[in-house]
Length: 484
Image 1 (cartoon, rainbow, N blue to C red):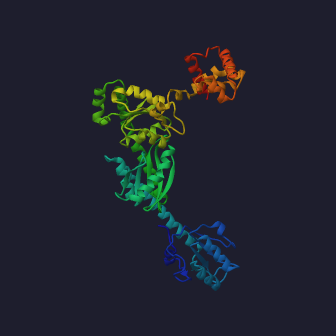
Image 2 (tube, helix red, strand yellow):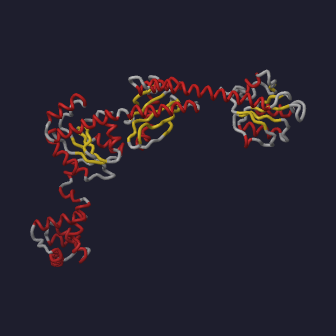
C-alpha cells in the first residue's frame, strides 16, 4: 500500500522528527505525494493527501496552516538549517492547534529523499495492484472455462475483489448472486429497482444503487436494443486495478450471455413452427413438437394477443424467463396465447409495444381469434396500447368507423355538402338521429319542418342520392359518424 506518515517518520536514514503530539492528524493515512513549495499559498498546486515540505516561515502562520488543513494536506515538513535553525515555535503551536502533523527535516536530509520514499512506495503499490489485477483476471478467465461459465465467473470475481456481485436478468429479477446469500431481502429489492430503468432504456448504460449491503455499481450487459441483464458489483473502496478487473468481467459475462443466443434462436424457430401448426388446425403436430422442449400448450379458452414495436426483442427475452403462456414470433409480430390480457398489458408497460387481444377462443379457432386481435390492434393508441376485442365489439359496428381510412372516405363523400353549406352536415345528422321524422328533428333544430324538408332536398341534390330509402340514409349516417 502507499506510504503513510508513520512509515515516513520511522525511516532511520531520513532522521525525521515529529514535532506535534502523536494524536494530531492521521499518521496512518496513505500519502499521495510529497511536494516542496515556498509560495505564500501553495494550495492551488497541491492535492489532498500530499505532504508539503518548506524551509521558510509563513508571514501569517495561523492562516497558512488553516488553508493547508482545509485543503486536506496530510502533513507538513520543515527543513532546518536552511533559512534558520530549528522549527518556529509559532508554527508548531498552530499545527498542534489546527490538527496538522508537523515534522522536522534535518539539514542532512534533502527534500528529494522524502519525495523519493513516497514515490517508491507508490510505484511499488501500483506494481503490486497491477500484478494482482493480472492474476485475478487470469483466475476469472479460467473460471469461464467451467461448465457453468457465468456462475463461475461471478463467484470468482466476488472472491477476488472481496465484495458481493449480483446479476439481474433481462426480466428485471435477481438471477444470481455471489457469495451465496450476499444479496437478499431489501438489498435485492433495491438492486432490481435500480436496474429496472436501465433495462427499460434498452441502451448500454451504467448506474449506481445504494443498498443495506453497501453501494453497488451497475452495468448493462448485451447489445443496445436487446440487453441481456445488469451486472451489479459492490463498489465501496474499489481502486483502479479492481475496476479494471470488473471491466473484464463485464465483457466475459456479456459474451457468456450472448453465447446463449444460438439456443434462443433455435427455440424461437421451434415456437414459430408450433404456432403455425396451431393456426393451420394441426393440434396433434403442435402438441408433439412443443411438449418435449417448450412444455404443454395452454388449456383453452385462451386469448390471442398480437404485439409489435421496437421493444419486441426485449419483450421476447422477458417472456423466456416468465411463465406467461405460449408465445411465438411470426414475422414482425409477437403472438401470445394466454388466459387473460394481463401479460400483454405488462409487456406494453415495460417495453412500449402495442397490439390487440382477442376474445376467449379454443385452440381450434385461433385463426378467427387472430383476426379479432388484429381488429383490436387497429384501435391501439398511446392511452390504450393493447385494446381488447371484447371492448371493440361492445362499442358496436359504428365504432369501427373511427379510423383514418374511414375519415378520409367520409370527408370525400361529404365534401359537396360542406362546400355548399358548412352547417348542412349537422342538420342532416340531427334529422337522421331523429329517425328521419321531420317534426321531431325540426323542433330539435329550432326550425320549421318545411324548412328542414327543403334542406334535406338540397342535400339530395348535392349528393345526387335519394335519401328516402334505408340504405342511402345508413350510408350517409355512417359518413357523418366517421367525419364526426
